[in-house]
Image (tube, rainbow, N blue to C red; front, side):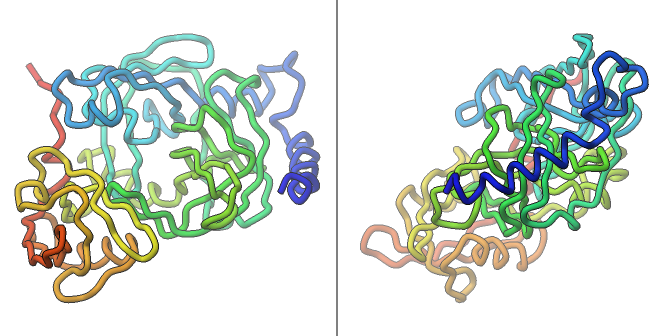
Length: 332
């Protein structure tokens, strides 16, 4: 695959080097590239000792975030959910405490509010819908110029996560970067187009051996940003079952159940095969999630048909709001 990608990468390099962010480091004060990179910050979170996400995501989490407004930093939500303490470190090494201002499970974004001022200029939100395959991009993690990677978009397609998560048009890039969590996907205008979420094995297309990264499009946060900042969440909560499901050859296998979650309480078991929702068959994660969410908001009952061992069973799960499952940081 490398010979097929070498020419586009050279094109990406030529285009990106010619942009404002490649100006001399000797003139940082007037360098729009320096301003752009200063908005990318390190995010560090210490998680509550009784957090539900402790087992899967760990007690200490670190990644990236991007300053997008007055004391507002956009990051990827799994870094900061159930955090006991959050710290943001600027490009100059200044450490600033932060609080979780909002979390949106539908997009996966987390929004932090800094408790203190920073001198960096917010990065403008760009038009991620206009980003097409073969477009060159810059991926920036915290650390300034040494943390820049040049890449290009290899795919725009849906992404289905086993944790009841679905994106209609995720952004896939190549080559892969290692510091992807919350990394900024930056376009030629110096605007933010997405945030890094995952490293994947099939960036180019499903089933291919093409390692890369998946980015969440920033367009998803633009219509909900004000509500997220003021209320801590946006829209009506979707029904959540608390089950991790893997799609394999047209079958949906239950891989993990959230302890004391709705699905576990209803009697689902690891290894079950989900056959249908409300009498309608499902064979993909996207189909499964859309059928669940179409039944209403959190709290609705979701009738599932599952193959449990050799027995076909109908199990009704009373859904909940996922945020109700997470542990909240104590307030005194």
